[in-house]
Length: 318
Image 1 (cartoon, rainbow, N blue to C red):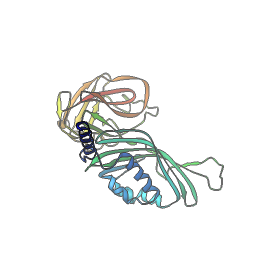
Image 2 (tube, rainbow, N blue to C red; image 1 turned 90 degrees about the vertical axis):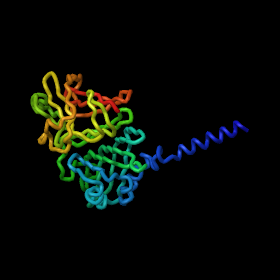
Image 3 (cartoon, helix red, strand yellow; image 1 turned 180 degrees about the vertical axis):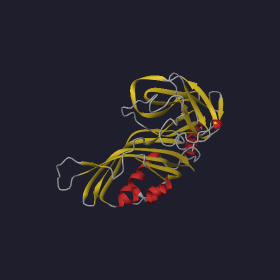
Image 4 (cartoon, rainbow, N blue to C red; image 1 turned 60 degrees about the vertical axis):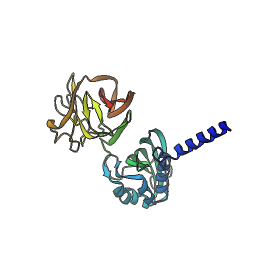
């Protein structure tokens, strides 16, 4: 009898934990993806309002920077409205999910007919999600799209390529994120490519402040207070700048994150400055790429790699 009572008590405890709204969001990342796909296929985007954050940003080929409402009523809404016999799908290639944040990358495909011509649009999709009010919500949605249209009247002809009149972005916006213990680190940046150019000492000048990306200043957000090079950095969003040198770089965390490149950079707003030695890479890194790698002991390594060079620094959660 005692054993039975213990078993029932344990089962009830597990059930209560499983139903605890403070630990389990009311939906799942998979349900958000399914809702997104089904809403597009049904040409009814209104249900998606519930799973897009009020702060959500939509990026397409680096040239569109919209809120969800603008994207819903504008580009996406108008495009699917013009298509007949449309099918849309997302095939997940990789995902990273913890209790409060998720990053999902995959391939998408949209087929249909528009103005009497067949559309076969495919590309990459990246979704960043976070838990808000105990619900998974999308905070970033990025499409890197290529579109192929079958030549009219030539069923067996090689498809011609089109891009809806928009030039392909040379430095698309992208994100990197990861954790240092319980602290989430989120980086927004534009990613230029080498394209055969001389980068260090050429495109990127030595001994001058650089936004360490293209277009807008690179931003880094910490969900909790952190420590970088023995300096406490309060939770919040910051600009990340560097001063490249031939043998040594200066890495900078600056309070002013909202600026074009480093046009409004003010050294008096620097919160952290640190000297690092650049690491040489064996293989060429064609596109500028940030990574956040968890190291244990509530630490993470943030790194930027481009061409044949890499710089990094440690972040410790407080």
